[in-house]
Image (cartoon, rainbow, N blue to C red; front, top):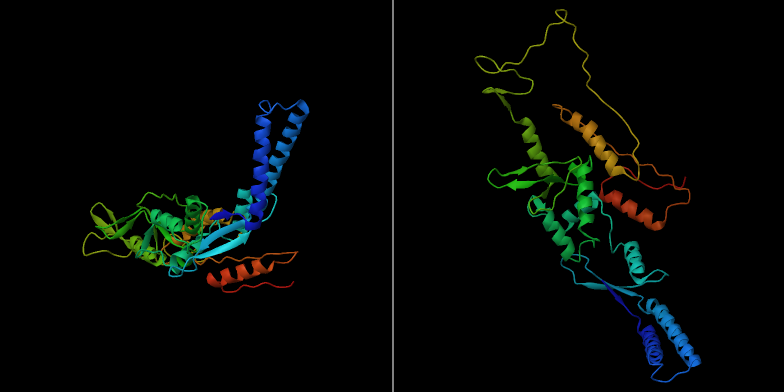
Length: 333
């Protein structure tokens, strides 16, 4: 990105700089020029005035942002010319304008990252290295422009913490075991410590789900016998299912609880944190049960007394469509 001067304003700035340099030279050589006290004070006043004029004309002159962009990976590079205004310093004005125009992102959601992974696509097979992703976002103009790699790492953490990771984001693996053809340290739907060490990976959710389900079905080994969940090892002839006690004999049968439901309000400012805790402390326990079918639904209600701006309506509606909301919409009342 570049900050460029306006052609007409640049001439005025150059003239002001010349005036400043001239009076600065006179004031510094006042003794050699044999100036009296009045003339010396006059030279000092003129120098200060010229200096202030230069300071005022610099932000007036450098008012154009030149930002390269690319609509897709095969398109040509296009230059966006954006006029910036305001009373802040040049860097602050430029950053505010870029953020408002979404040409510089200081925050990225996990679902938006998944969208970019699929759109290009950025996947290398069934996964992509996190270090590779950092390089991609720092290299290609057709990807969102991020402030730094911390924004990308935060987006990865946000995506991994979502309870809906299987449909909306991705999974995380510490590495890929080429010999065993499986991922090590595979995690999703919880708070994860993300490393950009050249080994860590983002994994496609469908691929991660297959490995996770296979790991759940693996037999548990103990004392040389194979014991499957719900089945006891038999001394001879093979495994035998434990028979329940007949009604009316022995202890009374315990009550079997076959359904759970719950609802909770989330902090709209810290949705990722709250959802991650709920995933770890509630959903994860339920999902770990054999044959359990767990469904999680997120409901959003927003009251906007002053009305939603047109851009917000457009952005939210488009994002809901992309994220495949079952129902959504704005209403007058």
